[in-house]
Length: 492
Image 1 (cartoon, rainbow, N blue to C red):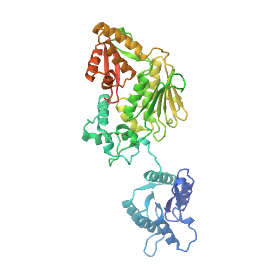
Image 2: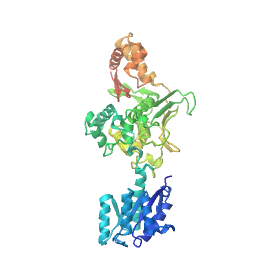
Image 3: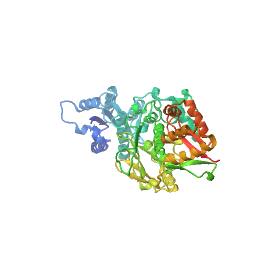
Image 4: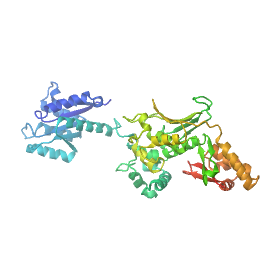
């Protein structure tokens, strides 16, 4: 740990008690005592120097000059200057870091007023009326010093400025994708243009006044977020039983922005759980009903990616078992919030608040602070057992599955076979059916990738999709790179 010397200066008679109390407090505090070594003149050892010269030497060599100014000016030397002002001038001429604390007073010595006025020209000062206020102000100032010197990171991870990033690291297409979503979902006020990117980031509190980027800006919009945060990833796996056993049926690790990771992880889960087509007489357009509501899956993944501890070496894990879905994130609940309280209305205490806001604006969550209760409600409405929230070394969300045995493609492909055969004849059925099967096997697959797999042109695949649209509402949801297919059955 660094040994940061704090020189506590003041008129001896006026602040004798406060100096000693501060000295003891700094040494005994669990945090400050690890970094700082206070110095007061009462502890000056016997040396072959005048007391004043020895004290000035300490002021010249300290890391931090901590000045206490009050009513009195104190003893004056032959030049009419007090020791306190000599010490302040010495610290200033040696470019020491200065913290000035001024006691509130009804009257002051004229020279003390002049000293305070001089100090106010150089540094920001704090006022206090009693020792408790002084102690609190000193603590905040010393802690801020540690943060500025990067001995200690106090701010939430997402608001911390990243010294290694520049605006060139921001991907314009990711900002454009966000603005389009946020405009549609929350009426985001700033239109996208390349020239507006700094304004957009500033509006989202993602930059400093001088334009430095926060960690949240990089997680949201960097060209390569993992260059800055190697553990920012989502690991997804499907297990054949209720335990973590091999063989793993499917395993993928997703990277990219937080939006991309959320889209990919949700798509992974939805493509590996059971689904059925609701009876077509219930509505004009009946959606494919998944055994776990997509809003519950999305909420669990969004919470994990948004609220995780990004300083941890762990990663978000999404694990689908035969009987449940578990979403793990390396992090812990905020102080005062328990797993039981997550099922009740509770205050929003996001550990990464600046990161959470754009995710809300983009419509990935409906309301701030109600995510876990919405998740519970969606599961119970779907007839599922109430989810569980577990805090161990990691935080886990457990969503239970229905006892459904049919595979997602069995119901849908059987339905489309009948409809396409009746309406379009047998000739095109095999390839169209394969297109649909590919969509459900991997809902992120692009038309280009399907064309390669089926050894036809992309134009042919798009014609097949158009034919399928006569019986289905087929929509590509999300970005061109990281979206997914959504299929809704139309009524005859």
